[in-house]
Length: 224
Ligand SMILES: Cc1ncc(COP(=O)(O)OP(=O)(O)O)c(N)n1
Ligand SMILES: Cc1nc(C(=O)O)sc1CCOP(=O)(O)O
Ligand SMILES: [Mg+2]
Image (spheres, rainbow, N blue to C red):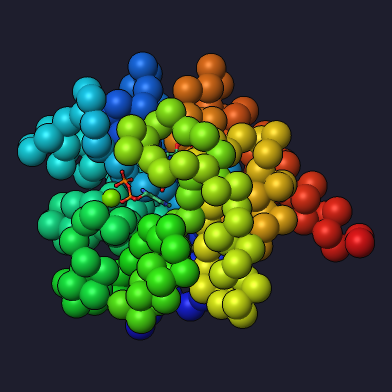
């Protein structure tokens, strides 16, 4: 059975993404601390300068996934559909330059499918093709993705919600504890980030701070 939208929205709240290229520390230790700090989903994104490939990549994926499993944190693989299937990950995230979402959906069955979109056309296509959630960004400038598009400040998320589209959405790109509330205000269900946790001196505290800023935003909303 495909994941229900309300469950998906819960998972997206604090979505951490990392590969070896994003940290000078041991990835397993960073992930362990991020989990202690309260992340709700993890994406393995082994990509770019300094990243692993082939067996070393698969071995790291398996180790990180084992840790996620112990703590019931869903484990998503970026781009690499075959790896996701080989290790029986919880899902896959693909963008517009990756394997097409409809083909990925056919391959992965009911696993979670995340799709990046930058225009309303891409949003509608992603939904038609079977996306469970959309990654929309970059909201703010980012240094973690070399080929990132210009920041859109959340305008597309607002447009999606204005059009009455309720698919689960996570904002991405340059998100920190300081601007997380602003992202949620656009209509996102969660925040997705790399450096705010992976570059932090204390990844556990960084995740906790992000979590607290989401919580205080929720509290403020429920009192308004
Ligand atoms: C949650 C989330 N949103 C967007 C992306 C970006 O995906 P994509 O455009 O395919 O770029 P790469 O990450 O593959 O470089 C993402 N990975 N996760
Ligand atoms: C992986 C990724 N995708 C983006 C998009 O705009 O689709 S921005 C991005 C990098 C996010 O890293 P950070 O939190 O360090 O800015
Ligand atoms: Mg991609």
